[in-house]
Image (cartoon, rainbow, N blue to C red; front, side, top):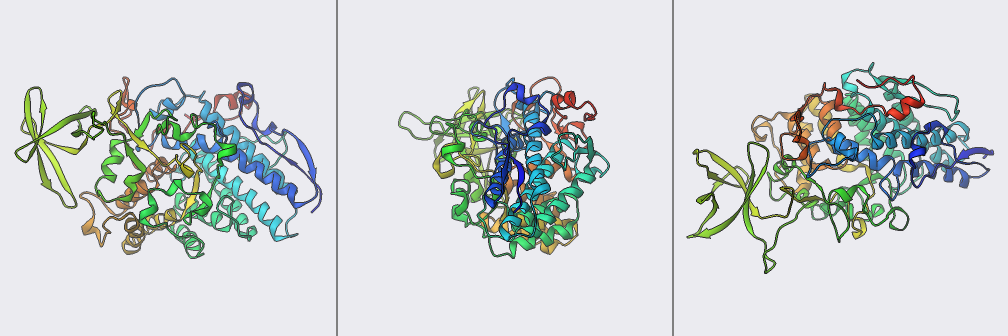
Length: 549
């Protein structure tokens, strides 16, 4: 391999001064190498920038926050001056440090990839070709997520502004924003190139041919090129490299050592020794307090809980851990709870009398009556106005500001370390769900349900034989998107799935997103705030960048 210049762009943390620096100037050191080891080191620098750091900074942690906090699966139990609150309640700000960190770390990684793509020589060896392919993949992944965060969904039109396409390492090359269509075309071209170059078998901590194919399936799905989405999902499924983990292990998916997980296609691998700093500022720290580590202030939404609780046997309930209150003998305390018309949780402790269950409210005893539903026993009481109020018959819970602590565990407990987590980019379950959505949009109910049922069967819940089995008022695409929501919750999909399908984000559930004078009870797909503002510091550095409305 010829001698080439490369840049190692490892940043443990960003100072306030650094955040204002132009990202294309991010070359820290120039070194020469003349062998594959140098190319590997340069590529590892790109991975590191996209992975993020032990303090919860960088691309992957910020992407998770920007994608998940504005979805309908989470409920914040308080207010904060942290920028996350403005993403959570759709009152986005141009000065968001999290959006700026995503932009800056994303473009640093892109420039790092560009160095290799420009200077490395293809065709010398399978190993070096594969490393070059990894850089094409990582560049495509960064652009895909950046255009999703800062640009309108592809389904809203190719001509909308996306993000700048920076395809060189030249610091004088300072592009303005390209269109969404142009960015998507580059993503597809990069992934096809990556697919052609990557032939070496590697663990799921590295990009591979199948990782490129998996991301292509998702990209084509977002572009509504449904046949191609199916084709590329099938390439991954038929590769024979991956298997769905069994039902009994599903709730421990993110506890597993990533390389031992047969379902993960690609993840950004976090290691305790170098990527974990007590867990207090990691993504999982906001979702749970585990072994004394973490804030535990954002919980599973009642909206998500209602969906996953439709089938008590659903293995995915294991990703949610209710924090039950205990009596003096350390027993759970029976209770019922519901959400009232003002979107507030109501908890009432219950007692048994003559084989019946009651709770007391304002001096009146109300009987909790069982009712056989289609798939499970439902419970209700009749209020003072003679109306049925359906309740969950469980146990009393610890609360914060009145919000019960339904801890989310998907971003914690890797290898039983409280908040260690390796962000999964692609896994096999998504391939079946991509196919299901694509077939639903092509009007092929049979194939759509076949693929949905693979996921439902693994979760341990009833499969759909036909539309007759659908919940009341749901059509084929509805049940597919519900399954995506159940399966891929807290993995960075939900917000994009809602808005790219021209759906309304329904946030009529308890949480501090409803505080204030003009809360977003529903977010329309046409609302300007479905995307983030371009960071003000980037516009200050490059005034030609056009701000989002």
